[in-house]
Image 1 (tube, one colour):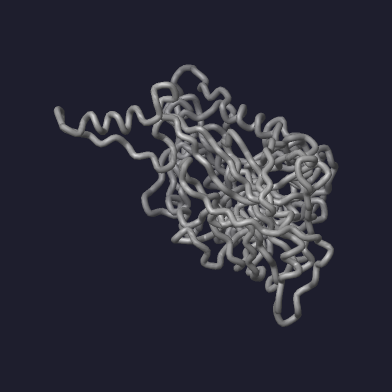
Image 2 (spheres, one colour; image 1 turned 45 degrees about the vertical axis):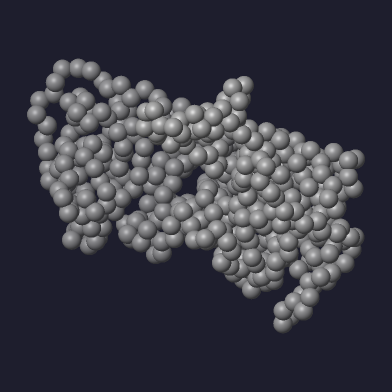
Length: 505
């Protein structure tokens, strides 16, 4: 899968003045919510009729200065004295007038749905309304209301809008439980594809827990219900008429539906919507660790029977577990009663937890399972702390030149003592300790793992090393134990940690 084939189930963008076709739908009472027949939906007319009134079209406009807007054509380079010079000057330089410097009004279309009729709350995708100057909500009966932005979350691509509930009679839908959806269950999408207005498509849940690398909490529902440009922000319904997903992305080489669409599950989206409504921002739980996947090699090196969980590669200074509760090298396999099958599970379950909550975390430390109690911090505060840590002082200690360092060659690496001279040579921060890697042999096991000169070995098999001799002794001991791989904890020049396994054969 290439990144350019993954599209936000995208809003349709065009320059003001271009035609947009909107087809109105008729809103009716939503009291009838029949279930699908076991052998497939003979008709979904009653279900669709009760839901169309709650699904809206989102129209936004944005003023783009100069010729930077979509569809802008650069002025051609003409030979000096060309007879067409005046014509092109008039068209390109003066088309917007001197006052606005060629500013253009750019419009876009997407979808959304009402979740609270009394308060006038509408949910859509963040990318549908991003950077918009004006937002309008268009209803199925042709009515239009101005909308204000309540809050957005870029990590999940969710946005909450508010309209005047007195300006139009609103019909609302509610979130269902996406965790109950199974592969093969029937679903219905309603939205505004290509600006055509209330359009109903039906399909099934094709897959769950999809990671398409669009954000840190990817857990998409995949469906073959037709989703196209303009469906972004629209609801995905179950057979009871409950919203179990927000349609947000498609895979398509052409921009049209090929039966692979993705929806944000309601389990994730509903919590974000609640926080945006209450605070105007998100308030996510934060553990304060850097993590990486547990590969088969790492599992073997740690004495684990199977590769599972999230490996703690580092602990954030000043974070919730900076007191030694959780340490680099620990593997988190359960968080607050929820199993962590792979690395990407942890950020999501932590983020869904309340700030300040005390939770039990099951870890594997040096081959032994143990439970520790952790009180969560707030992710948004942690991000500020992390950015400050990464932008901290990296000036090196100054002093007399140290004598020539002792070195050793092991596993395709040349390692040496970490002192003033090597710190200066590789720009290694003063708070990094261990044994510095001064050279990596081409095509060696270390090179295959992406190890670079200037990185520092801080631990081998979860035991600290301080000299090249320590490195040699630890590798020798592992070989005597019959280990096939050595687990190294490496520090970058600025102190960020990661774990790497290297073959010892």
